[in-house]
Amino acid sequence: MINIVLAAGYATRLYPLTENFPKPLLEIGGSTILDRMMADIDNIPEITGHIIVSNHKFIGHFNKWIETAPYEKPLMIIDDGSTDNDHRIGAVKDLLLALEIGNVQEDIMVVAADNVLDFSFGGFVEYFKEKGTSLIMCHEEQSLKALQKTGVVCLDANNLVTLMEEKPQEPKSTWAVPPFYIYRKEDLEQIRGAVENGCGYDAPGNLAHYMCERTPMHAYPMPGHRYDIGDTESYNKVKALFK
Image (cartoon, rainbow, N blue to C red; front, side, top):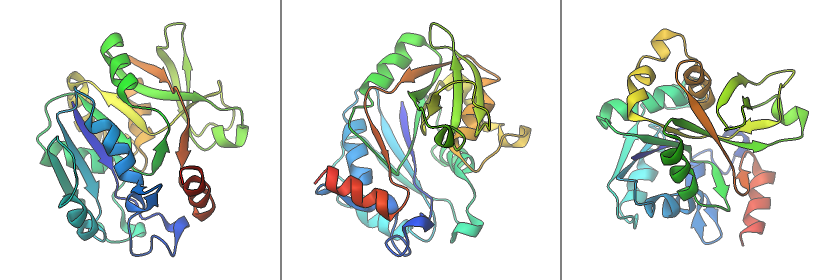
């Protein structure tokens, strides 16, 4: 299983901190946002390597980071060529670029690089092996405002996804979808043709929505907390929490 990290955003809501520096490499508790995630994923036995997709503006920071990255599994950094937020190519196209340049032919884990978690992805991988389908993660969200800004799924008794909606005005459940996914190698052909067949490409949830309509997908209930670092206030709160 290849771990693909989507790290090509520009984090404009964190300016000036991220005006000339990538959000995933910001410091949290003596480490970085990216390293906290990588340290966990690299220790999962099923993971065979990592692909990190950056943009052209910040590629130098990631190339410098990789020089001392202490991980056992092979690392590849990919430059998606974009130079500013107005011309970003989108998370799904970044994923397709990783599949192409990395010549990926195996299961993939796809994660957004701007989250801090208090749990391991190990359980996510075990659940994927148990269910045998592509997989999303989900968590209970009671805030209507929050549900209207994210993907929302309906599940059956076995956590099979029966419906997924992106940013619904009237959510049909309280199961929100964070940006963590596992896709089977058998589904890669569908993924490679997704954009040309009408899949949205700005957010990783666009692909999950597209794939839920084309292949069985289960949902793994998130076993802990996810801290999404979206602006300076949330960054400072997470820094204090993990100090």
